[in-house]
Image (cartoon, rainbow, N blue to C red; front, side):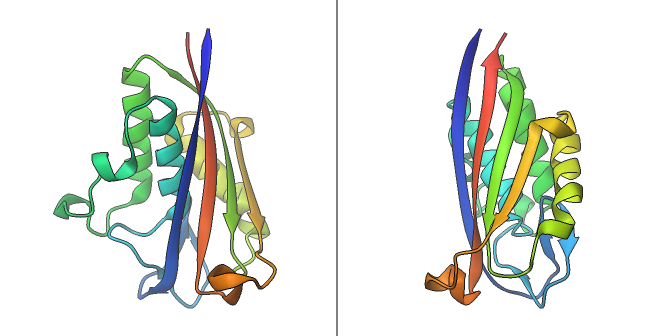
Length: 159
């Protein structure tokens, strides 16, 4: 059995006139994240991690921001599609680990729902999905509250 790992990253600025969504969960905040789709940076980072682990390219290759089909799209749909592509390439999804860096909103109250949505979307058990919130301690644009960034690691294996 060969285990492979992929690293995903995404960042978006606040300022969109839509609800803030992270891992498919609506979170109370004055503005949403900018982006071609719904701006769900958690879903985007996990999508990139899974595609990278399987050496299938990145989110931009599969869901380009030049394609009107993905305008304002639900990013969990992209995540589910990426999971299916990885499975069709002969891999089983093992787990994902996500770190969201933002000064606000505080994510702790939303983490259980976020984990559940990612697990459900990917067909993983809840204990195979980890999501953590961190701050940037006031440093740089993230620390000033201009946006957020997300790091994700995914493990897959070929049975």
